[in-house]
Image (cartoon, rainbow, N blue to C red; front, side, top):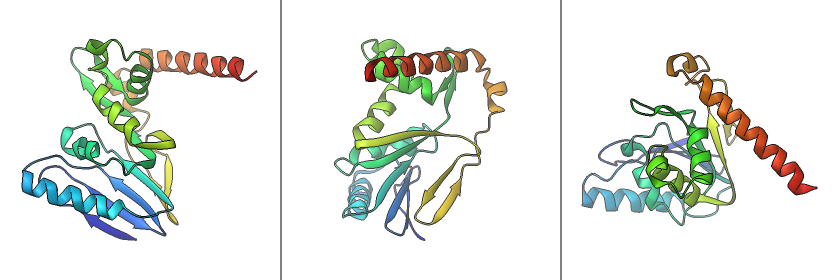
Amino acid sequence: MDMTVFNVGFGQSILMEEDGDQLLVDCGSKNSSSRWVCSISYMKNSLAGTKRNRTALLTHYHVDHYRYFKEMKPHSFDDFYLPYVGFQSKSKGSILTEEALLTHLFLKGNKSDTKVYLQDQMQVVSDLLKKNGRIAVLMKGDYFTLGHTICEVLWPSLDIEKDFELEEKREFINRFKSYLSAHMRDYLK
């Protein structure tokens, strides 16, 4: 496995490659203009060419870990892995990534509410996916592959729901998913 750690000045960005697959872990943040231009150019060149599978993984929603993703177009990804928990807000409670995705997809018109639900980050993710690209929300116990390497997710675990008091949100998301499934079954008939 090859690993390249990019000098993004602030934050982190690591490209891992194996058997033609690429995994870009985080994408740093603009710190100084000269360093930024050099780093983003190097990242784009590293992602150029024909690869078997190109995946992005965002570890968490701090700007120093996702800001450069906005600059990666047109180098889009086949898969985008996001963390299960977005963040905990004092005013809105815990925000789940699934909740943020649903809000982004179905409530775009209500900007004041969706701003809290990771609106900007969800737009960046959807802009970077290839036409048939997939978004996966990861938590402890999930696995994904990079080439022939099997990668295990170690955090967060399901017991985090106790800490974040997410029972109502989990119920809401499950109801929404059930509604979407029923709608898709009717649509496909």
